[in-house]
Image: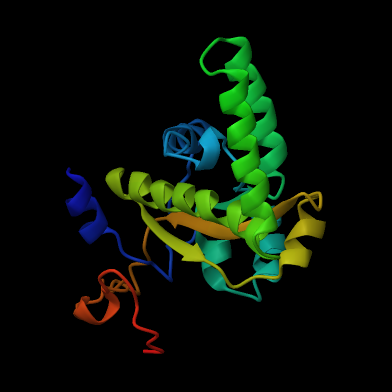
Length: 213
């Protein structure tokens, strides 16, 4: 199946068949490994994945996500987390590349300077770096699940602090989004369809023209 077919086939499923599928940890880890092959900023992988399959742990996550039933219904929910210390990751990665002779010390210095300037460019820059690439990985996971005939939903409604406490995350990491995977409910067969709205209103060339639309 081609990429365009996968994108068109993917649907957001809000109701899963409770206990309708058992997903072995090996299958989920394989998908995460494949998703981790996506491009990442500055060549590092600023993400962590928490796989939640246990019924009791899904109940905890359900409470963190304001009581959304699909969390309890899904066969598994993956908490995709972002690393706010991308700069530290880049430094280690560059040192390794210099040691291996892949880049020069001067090139490493230049790259680190770009990272520093990016982070200092705005108060939100570090947060944005922690969110961008993990979001790519989350979407890749959804496409990989679709390829396997599974249904998915991206869940962004949750309490960050509640998840942090319940799943023992340090302040360095932030939960970016949840990816629920399972079999769509037979009682709710119509998953959300892709929008047929024209994209012309979203596309600009060269600049946005200061529009608020």
